[in-house]
Image 1 (cartoon, one colour):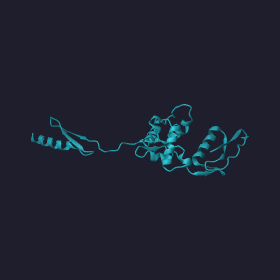
Image 2 (cartoon, one colour):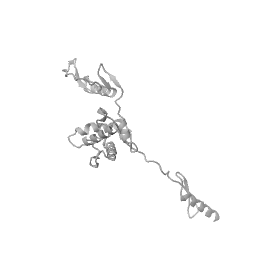
Image 3 (cartoon, helix red, strand yellow):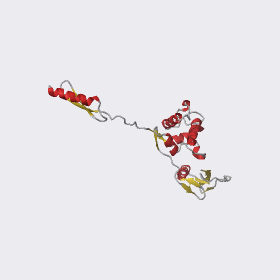
Image 4 (tube, one colour):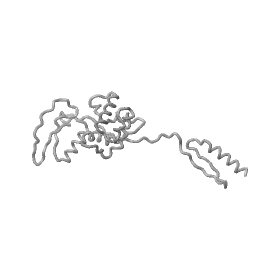
Length: 208
């Protein structure tokens, strides 16, 4: 009995205020012992994630829709972005709906300007830098979209992402695409020339 009394007292000491991750000893009336492990306290909850690719797609498509149809696969990410904009008093609660429409574009533009961005860098489309800063302590950014390095294609300068898109478009369309103006060529846009066709192939002119 004395041994059980001592063990019971010892168990009581352990159970009063167990440290994070500590083992707690307990006794049953029959004298059997059991050990359980307490969950660590103060552990930060995992942050939600924003899919940048899906968010940028929504920001490009939603404002041009005739209705309020949400971009597939983007709602959860857009909601996180809108909630962060609301927390900065840039977006009213009624617009936190997972739809990256013109109101959200305007709010994001204001956020980009608050970071010191100007011109095309403050066009309302989320970029990696601004999105990462907006998500500080709120969410992480996944599926990052990057324009890549600049590429000179015969006097027309584009980024590697645009080049990859054009290559894939040519493959899908079965057409040869020729650029009139690149992403980084602030020059006068020449008049379009008629497409040419030779040996069953065709060429279309476009602008990056």
